[in-house]
Length: 386
Image (tube, rainbow, N blue to C red; front, top):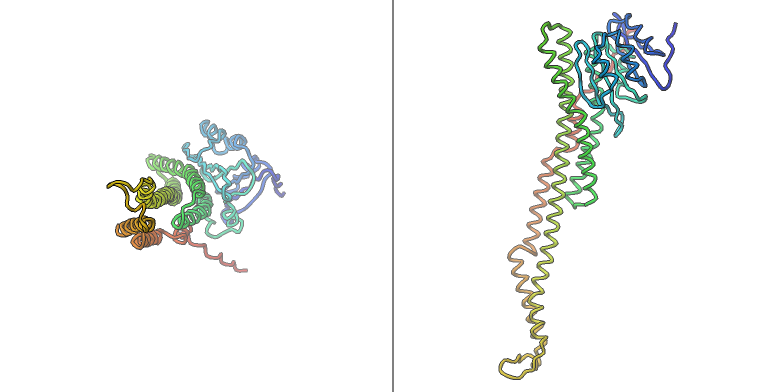
């Protein structure tokens, strides 16, 4: 008798491992799925649109959930983390379906069983894992709950990589634009990127710390077993995956802070340039104002202290020439100090060359993308003989 498919709002799918193959079945209710677990040596129940209370109710007798584990599962803590309850471990991971689409996924790990719970129906990052299981990948024929936890955790971590790649490209564009010409409109966008990176870190750092505590707790147990060692290895590998993402997030967060400092320094330098130009203009016009003020007093040319230029035929050209001479002297003085003219251009050229050298020393988009996509592609699955 064929299993009834679940409704559009919910999806209850079971992947079960027999001695020879991997089966994929859909059920109309969670009770039917848990009743079919006895036919498999290991199983993954993939749930969408099912409440956490229903999951705790149906799994309480199947895997002997403790009251504390049931309460933790029902409450559905909206924070990435991990809790260990003896043979049962509950992971809460923040997953990205697309850019800016965030969903919490609870992963329940028990002996010979993995349950993934998504209260909201819709897409998730597990499509690649499902396809490999439906195609009965030879690499997964001997998989157990620990391998599945690692695969599911890696799928969630892989969903972060397009987000981090997009943020990295944006930060690189902002840096190139700020080196050319600072723009105040970029300040809000840089702040927004830094806020998003802090949000990403909030979903990764607590989880890695919690996995470290669980790994330490499992290591000191009195009676270690091969299954326990496999659980510890899977948690350690997942912790390394999360640590690699955290390294990229921390690097990009520091890059965003560097861009903020670069903008503030560039804005300060621009203000200093404007003040310097205005100061030079003011200093040039100060002696001209003084000369114009002296010759504008209009004293009569009477007495020994009178200005002879008032009635002199060349008095007006003399005053203009004196102003021009003062201007030329000041310009030559400023030029010799390197405040205007060619020395200033040479200084700007040196600064531009230094900025280009700093930019060239920074990792490019391709190198960071290579870090983000460091996992090798899987080889094509060989065809089975007819």
